[in-house]
Length: 331
Image (cartoon, rainbow, N blue to C red; front, side, top):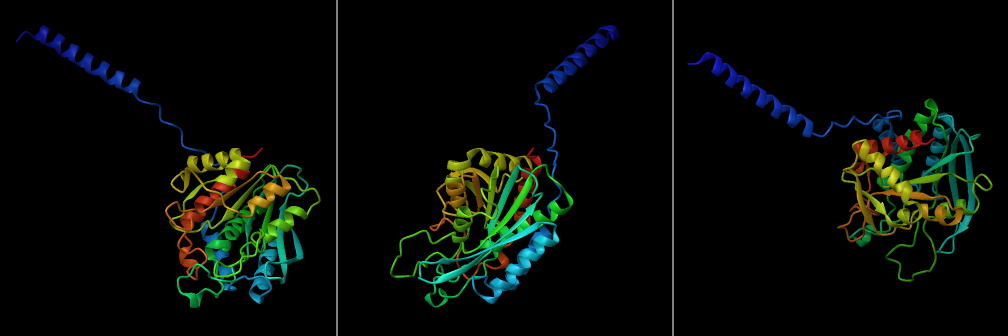
């Protein structure tokens, strides 16, 4: 064996391997830095307990003892977190000809700040389970653990975090009443009119602060289910596409893209509509929508199955942390 020649040959092989390795390194994409969260940690256990407490009162149908007791609890809770609490009470005439007493509950943080963000959910529950297959069950009120209480529970935890952590913007949290008492599907005689979202319609016409303004608003509705899918609702896109993009992009960066899906869906008449149309505040709706469902909603929607079994802490965490992050990113 020729030692010198063999050594040279080995050097050539080693150099070639090294070059190939370096070439491979250069062709690899740089590893992106992990997202740096700026908001305090959202406690899903805490949010879950707030939902559980609301449900413990029973169905929160306006002008019932359960509704009154839950309203007192919500107002006291917001106050205990340092919010300035305002209760907006009014009487509205409903589709059935009855005068219904409503109670919108508002908690304001940093009321002196001119730049404000609006967060809202409805706290009442539906007086009849008109999506039940069994006609006998359709006249019973629902507990509304997901439809109503979940959004309120998430916002109560947001309020608790705002007590100890101060964003650069003022924040107003609104719990709207009489959202879910639209005319029942089993009624034979349809009465024309906007009978949903009565609390937000009233507030939009006469807000708790004259000429109230906010940079934008976020509505939370049915945000607790374990299989929740939050798609880009059409009316949200129509009135506030940039806010939808901000929220969905933030959720994706934080690892919640499996819930906040980049897909546009149909229109929903929800509490964000009166706020958009009457108050001209760009608002979006984070709501669990189902593209393969005949109703467009989850199977427990407006049924007696809307109980705590449909509340998932992981979903609450995804929604609550995203909302907190959007708040604390705002300058």
